[in-house]
Figure 1 (tube, rainbow, N blue to C red):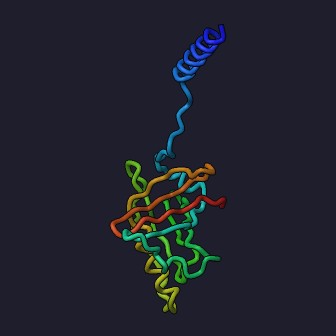
Figure 2 (tube, rainbow, N blue to C red; figure 1 turned 180 degrees about the horizontal axis):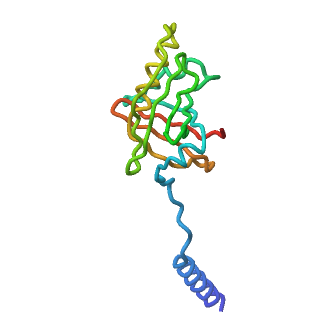
Figure 3 (cartoon, rainbow, N blue to C red; figure 1 turned 135 degrees about the vertical axis):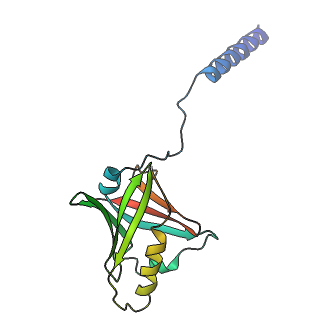
Length: 162
């Protein structure tokens, strides 16, 4: 009788395990890239949080003053889309447009102050960083992240309220 009870318990456990294995559970997916639009870009300022060269080294020129990170401010001015690069030594900015989900930076402008180092290198690195393929996603905290990738580096900007 004891053996019969053990066999029945084992059978119940086996059936229960099989039934549990047949249940579906919601899948956890990695963050997905979102389509880039002017509205999404202009909704926030974008603060640099990480920039690495293709060899994995940090782009140190962009992090000489952690209290004033490179920040991109996308905006519309008189019907024209513009981006300004904040915390640079020179006043810098450009026109931009979004074409088929790709950001195109055009007609970059800059004042021509003779900035000392390391600010001069920061300005040069800024112009190199904003050129590339833009993508938009969200991090684990659901904060929008703007990523710019080019042949030399990958830079990540976190959305901050304007």
